[in-house]
Length: 432
Image 1 (spheres, helix red, strand yellow):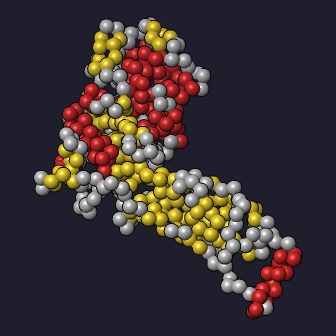
Image 2 (cartoon, one colour; image 1 turned 60 degrees about the vertical axis):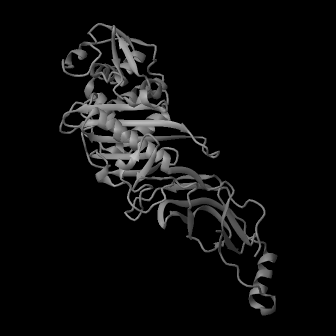
Image 3 (tube, helix red, strand yellow; image 1 turned 90 degrees about the vertical axis):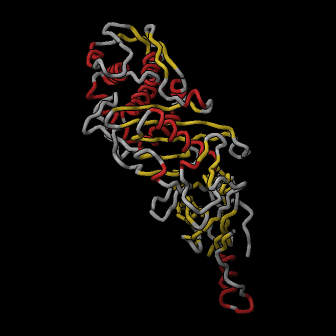
């Protein structure tokens, strides 16, 4: 078989994530062992869900709503419509915030900067900061709420609907753990300066200092966000993120996002989120599943100037894989936060040194007939671990193949009709 030595096409990966029931979580965590109504662990580098439970259930998000207010404020700043140093005058809208709500105690007519409002919004979870920013951005609350909902749809938050910017409990005000992970991911990815606010352990306004209610900021210096929330209807909610160094030279730093909804107390939401965070850091790893320029398969070319064409991955593809060595579900209460290991039967369960994965390649095209100059789906790649699919890629590329000359096609015809000149017909080949 002839291997082409020159590039035959300019290709690009189009990747998608399988959501079929047959696809297992990266970590199999027993839901009953997690003291939260719904939750999710997400790896933003690979955009994979490590584990989740009731992640699409619609629940009251409480002050996690304010992440959307921050998103729209930072969006306006990046668009040049606002400046962090800009000073505005608080309007009478602050008087709508009731005495028992979280607030900065802004007074109508008081001057405050956008930067100070963002700190009040995120650290103090101030409802008066939320409505003041909403009015500044959109002119009035109804228009801002409409903007919140249209943005949620743009971000793929299909189980979310907002009716106020502060997170006050209302019948039609809801979100889900999965949607709040999406919001968190987009917020960090597009506007990383958000973390400069959410990692503040306290904020002082008008001689009043408010300590951050994310108590993990003091316990773990890798934690830098994201937002807490509480109402009687919602329970105690937390969107948490941390970024840590890794020994992996391919992935020197790694971030994880955790959302827990409906826990029983401020301390319980911190404990559960902290356990999920450290469990995922210990027992999962981001690895390169496909290396750049790695040959995946070869297809025969009919009537082409080149007799075959080898597809090589144009980019590396990173995935999250499990390092948990056992087949039994993980009981979260068995995770020891002190040594950051699961303890079963008084024995430490150490993570694997390296995950073992396998690529299953299914060819969509068995051969290519020249000339070709179009986009084509060439193959599907399923990444397997422990006989379970953990990710799937669709390989699509613009294919450009020249047709063979008349003389080359004549020789090919002779080989086809004259047995003594014929060679075995080329076949597709998959590299493993």
